[in-house]
Image (cartoon, rainbow, N blue to C red; front, side):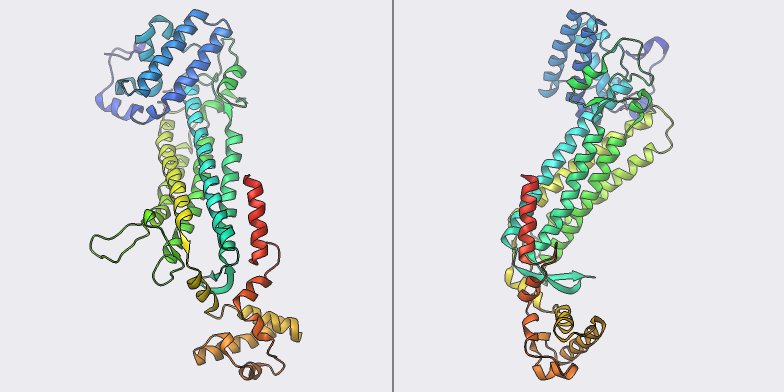
Length: 459
Ligand code: ARG
């Protein structure tokens, strides 16, 4: 049997394989609420413009509410033969209210309909990402505030570099997730234009009011070019791009938590609630949540690349290729929200091991730069000479199997005769971090100032 929507032109129905490749209902049913909201706005506008009668609009509105309750109640029977959510809803509407259902699609196409539904769905994901990021940032701020002056090693090349503070390290992630927040908000602002009323691609000859539907659906304005409106998926790519960068940040942090929770580091203890055990090794407590978060970038960036490849080379306006957009965004959004929530939970629950952090902070010649700076500041040496002298003292300490503060004054003076006992003050890690008072530096006072600034930003 030929199709209910376009059977006029067709003598035969589709091959089973055609139906299988063509149908999107298995996944686009997630946009049911958005589809019905869009149809309600469209029907109300058609009546306001005298394109359909008020009584037909009223029947459509009531019928759509019935269909929505069937969907929400789980009694709606989805049909693959009806291809997608748009035709499933319309066909059911016809069964419920009869003839007026056929007037709903006046001045509209599935092309602007699907763009509208998908935008509404994606817009909610920008909002969900914003909430998830805000919650994570709050958890990080709490960690930073508690440990503003806890010393730990800072690394470059994963080799001990200079002492930093726990709070400073947490605040580095606040900056990263803060940029993610700004990217999400920025993209949401840009995407909030209504495609509804662009119709198939050219607009419509009916006297529709696109401002009215845009407003009803919470859009800032109608999109200004009907060809662009139905062929644009930038909003989905913006989401996937912002989600990919955010997932990359989550992955870096997760990697640090995996390293930090190892027996070799012991920088943090992760809570039982976000760890797993081993079925064979009784001693194990594995950071599975962190590892899964570390991995999520794979599918999220994969979705970003996949949709970019779908869109490249598509001529204007709509092509069926674009039906391949939704699963990528659905999957990426689900996994981003899950990863954000899991990271928030881990950060809230984790405890820093202050003793391990402090012990590690002082090892590995971490205050060598402080020694070099002292030679410049107190003895007036050029930095390059100070660097060389300090390097020779590090080599001496290494030979003796000790750290810089363990050298005697005589050993220090063997490298430069003017060194005095005052030098030992700068070799302590507390003094080291307290001295890093440059704006954005690791000194506890700077960290506290940044915590206060961020609390003001996120309210
Ligand atoms: N199921 C389609 C999609 O998800 C709806 C739009 C169909 N438009 C068309 N001209 N065939 O993209």
